[in-house]
Image (cartoon, rainbow, N blue to C red):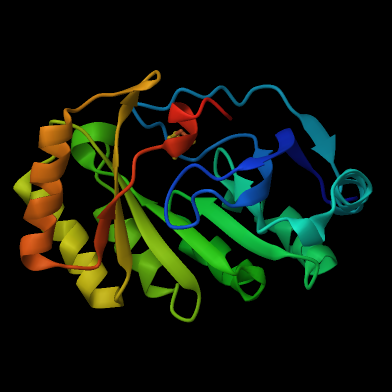
Length: 224
Ligand code: SF4
């Protein structure tokens, strides 16, 4: 039986988060997720079924991959489709870079495809904003990212705790990874004040300097 997965949408746009902000990417949004974050605002029920070959044909027919910074695998959680990715990623190898946006909890699945991943955007979920404590899973996941350009994204709000800050710093230090602080959004505006953002950035900087504060830029310039 053919390997298939359900894809919610495929579109080209500008990356609005993290260190590659501003680069043009092709976004492939996978349906479904293994988590249920409090702040998740995306429905993943609808989607089209693709085989790896059908997806490859569709994106190479419609988009000039060489003009893009990378293909962003996003979701949902793309690593839920690991069997699909094992067949799809070899097809696009050498055509463009692959950027994986992940909730950083599916370590075994990452290990099956990491040879094809160029950049990992790893979300660390803070219990205060996501409602879940996934610190052990995040630690396992980040331990397997060595050799791949990786950064950690931390979505925070007013409830961020000292313990959470210390955990993020310990992960950054242990794996020598850049931390990106991203204020949680309420629709199109930040849920925290600019003063609070600076206070949290300063708290990180007291103990760890490889950290930046980058809001979701695409929401300010009104693109997807
Ligand atoms: S990991 Fe992302 S897609 Fe999954 S529930 Fe959390 S916010 Fe939503």
